[in-house]
Image (cartoon, rainbow, N blue to C red; front, side, top):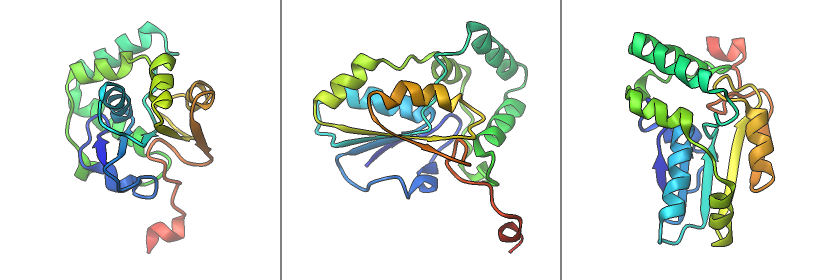
Amino acid sequence: MKYFNGFSLQNEEELFSQYLINSDYCVAGFSFGAQQALEYTYQSKKRIERLILLSPAFFQTQKPSFTRTQLRYFEAGQEAYVQQFLSNVSYPSNTDLSSYLEVATKEELEALLTYTWDKKKIQEVLDRGTTIEVFLGEDDKIICSKDAFYFFASLTTTYFMKSVGHVLKPKEKLEEALT
């Protein structure tokens, strides 16, 4: 499987093992990596049977001021921005992402925020025989998962999961967290 990492993350695919397929014909990506996974699949001449998009970063319904604000916050304090971002990524779970941290650049953040999902590209990938699965969490604090759902559901197999956020993990129960 070819996997693409999320923004400011590396090697986090183990967090998504229940959604991934270990196959040479599978491509997957999380958040920012989902954008890259689609582009890779679209450009690839190789056989790809399944494309798995985990919480695809979907900002095309945001106003341009949102992107400008995010970039300003990033420039003002890159470390603080990334820490807050990762906190929002893990919500509502208590998933500690610090071991996966790989601080990204402003250029990567801008690419993430300005990417436009293209229905024609998605349809072309589907027409080649690739199955596309999209996983979205209802409680996502990074993207508007409902906007993403309405976009992807008309084209792909899309799972909208209740009580999970961007990392597709539920909030841990207090008694489980204490043991």
